[in-house]
Image (cartoon, rainbow, N blue to C red; front, top):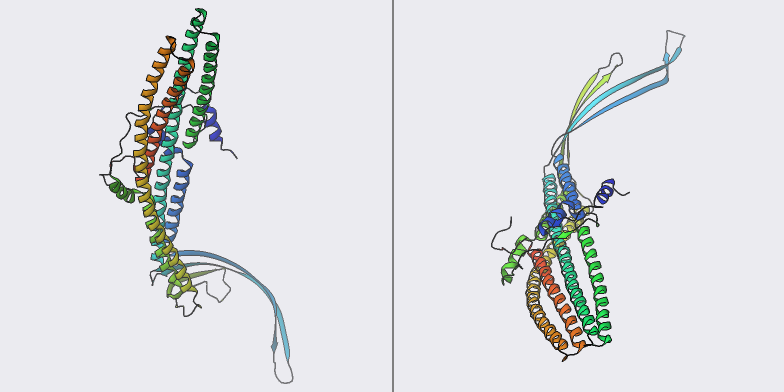
Length: 437
């Protein structure tokens, strides 16, 4: 069943004016709405409930019981009289009995098993809280990439719009020159074809932009038709050449490391708690019973107390097998942590390399754009003077459009690589000199 609140939210965006959206705004919306974070928070709440449950065994338990019993039956008896005579008598009886009792019991943790179980639930709760950080870190990467995709698509739309404007201007000039007899009709037809091709490319770019905006809204866990006007960031961020320091920062900050460490702790306590099958246990119990409407000659209340000490002797190795299995779970988690640390180191170094490579590609693309602009200018001058070919102008314009698109693609590939680096070190900036909180 679709939540009513979602339908209202979807209806509310219809006809709404486009709102400017910065990257910080997008991150804030995602942190508030994201389904993954809501599930992660639910896991924390569940872990807290389990922690309260584990603490509950340290307190006493009180049980109130009520009992009603109905008696119906017959009895026979005999009477021996004096000499020469004997006789017998019988009868029936019926009645009911109502009792109420309250029992108070307390488990004494002689071997510390309950304490270990409690520590296990605490570590599980801390692992769940670290798991929330894992989801938040992944979410931020997805939001940054989706936001960059919108900005890249908008920039590519602008490239196609500029190309269309230039194509239309050339077409108008060609029509004037055709009337003057300076160029043949074929040149006008060719320029008209270029305008149509550029219009088609613009429509495609606008479709890509719409898809990018819908994907961003989906990443923000809000209706995909919500209007979006992404605001570009300022200057491109810089990546310091500190791979080793950033690896250390990643290991220190990444919530996956904390989650794994807490999981190992929890599994260790679980293994110790499994030893309960061979350890003594002690229960202290007291019961007070009150008989309502007692029969004549009987008491109306009673109290009993008991101390139950049990000491398992032999369980066919079941407990030892449980402990061994729990230890293997812990060993697997330790191996997983080693693998995680190695993976983080690789991820950080790869992210640094990709960011640096993307920045170089962006600088090369800028040079290519400058060259393409000059090539188009020269081709246009030669064509206008009758010394150049039409095909040179068309090719130069295509090269410029492609070069401008390459600049925008390279720019946002660098920003995506930068976002991946932030995720790799588990921070929102590259100020690795600060200790993570």
